[in-house]
Image (cartoon, rainbow, N blue to C red; front, side):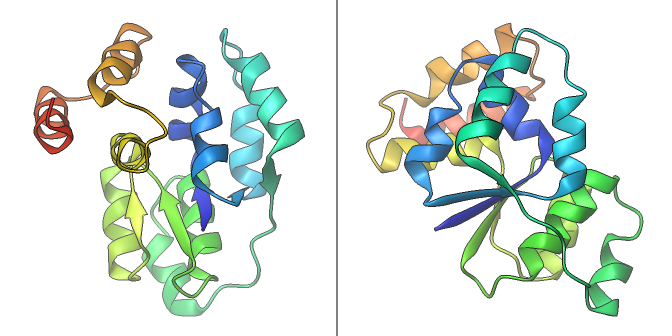
Length: 162
């Protein structure tokens, strides 16, 4: 499986020193150049962990020319999100798009791109035996300032059976 990621989930995993989850879940982790630029601008404590991942297992992949219908659907999104969706749209069902933003997820849905957010990724990691407790990672994310609504946290607890 390939994962095409937007900026936010990578930063979230770096904040809790768990970027390795990405590597364990997917054979390839891809980001478009715009997401790479956004990650390079990160100056928090997690910046060195992001740099390590960029130098070892996260690969920068150019966004090929996009179909006009894709361009229309992503036109109003943040550049990083739009480029991540554009890149994911070039894979025929072989890639999972990692994206938290609601508007971006709606656009990806319209393009029929399989999508999950950071919480969905943690649930998948638990399902595959990579982690044992989703809620402890959610608590860490919140402690590190990663915003997650109470509703999302409660749904995650239910889905994780915790």
